[in-house]
Image (cartoon, one colour):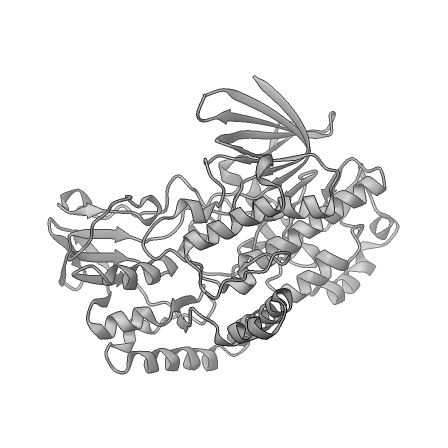
Length: 508
C-alpha cells in the first residue's frame, strides 16, 4: 500500500479539474498538488462521450477558460476539439504531470485530530490500494455517473430484435447507414444525434414525451472572426466573451421575468426555421422558458433534417417495444433497426464518494452549499460546480479563483482549518442545481446538497454577482469558521440585527 501527502488533492481531470489545477499553479505556486483521475485520459465528459455529433451546448467563448482564450472559429465546438483544448491547457500550464490516471477514489475522511483528508483509492489497472492525505480537497467530478446513464425499464425491451444503444456507451464502429433509427428523448443529446445520424441513416425519428425549447445558433461567429483579424487575440476573446455573457444573461433574465413574451419569441424563431414543414405542437413546450435548459440547434441542422424528410419528430408515450420497433400509446408503430435511449443522466455527486468527517457520514441532501463552492460542515473542502443556465466554465473559473484565495488567506493567517457554518438554519428546498424542473434533477433530489434561503447559502445563477462575491468580497465574512472560531464579523454581533443587512447584501 502506497501513501502520499499533498497540500491539495483534486478529484477529476475534466474541464473543472484541469481548470482548478491551472489556477493553483498560477495563484498558489508553492502548493504541492495532484489530480486523481479514474479514467486513463483527461477530459471528463469530452473523453467519455463518443456519439456522433457530440459537441458543446454552450458557446466556446464563454465555455473556454478565462485565462486561456479559445481561438477556434467554431462557436459550438465538437467533442474532440474541446478535449484537445483541455489537453493543450494542461500542457501549457504544466499540470498534466500532476495527474494520477486510473485511480478510483473509494473513501474520503476528514480527521480533525490530524487536520487533513485521508483518501483510500484503488489503482484499477493493478488492483493496488493507495492512500493519500491532503490538507485541502477539491471535488471536480461533475454531477453525473460515468458508469451508466439513466434508462427507464421499457416494457417489452427484451423482445426487440434490433440494437439498443445508449449514448453514454457508444460502440466504436456502429454502422447505421441506411437504417431506421429511433432516438428517445428531447434534450441536448437527442437534438445533436438526430440531425447528425440523419446524414447517413435511412430515417431518424426523435420520439419525445414533451417538447423542449430550441434555439438555432450559427457554428461560426462572423463578428468574432472579424474582430480576430483586426485585434490582438486576447482582446478579441474578451470582447466576444463579454458580449456572449451579456446576451446569455439577458435571455435568461427576460425568460424569468417575462415568460410569456419570451415564449412567443422562441416559438416564432422556430416557426420561421420550419417554414410550415412540421407541426408546431412538436416544438411547443407546456412549461415556461428556462424551467428546463434551453437546447441549442447548431446551424439549425435539426430543422433542416426535418424539412428534408430525413428526420421527423413524434410526441407520444411508449406503450411497448416490439420485435421490430416501438408501439406508441396512440397505437402508432415506429419501425426501427436501432433504438437510442437518450433519456438523460444519472446524477451522482463527488464521483460516488460518500465523504465522512471524523468517521461520520456527510449526508449531502441534509447539507447546504456555501457560495456554491463549499459544503456546510465539511472542513477544507471545495466543490467546483458550474452554472446550469450559462457556460459551466464561467462558474468553474471563479470558484477555482475563490478556493485559491481561501488557501492563500489561510496561509497568511496561519489557519489550518476552514469550515462553513450555517448558524441560522438556512436550509431550503431547492437543490444545488437550482429551480430547474428537469426529470434527471427531480430523480436525484435525495442525492444533491441544498441551497439556503438567504445569504451566501443561496446559490446564484448570476455570473456578475458571483464575480463580485467570489473574486472581491472578504474571505472572513462571518460564515466561515477558522480553526474553530468564527470571525469577528459574526462573533460579536447580534444575528437578528444582521439579518436585514444580509438581506440587503445578498438578497432575501
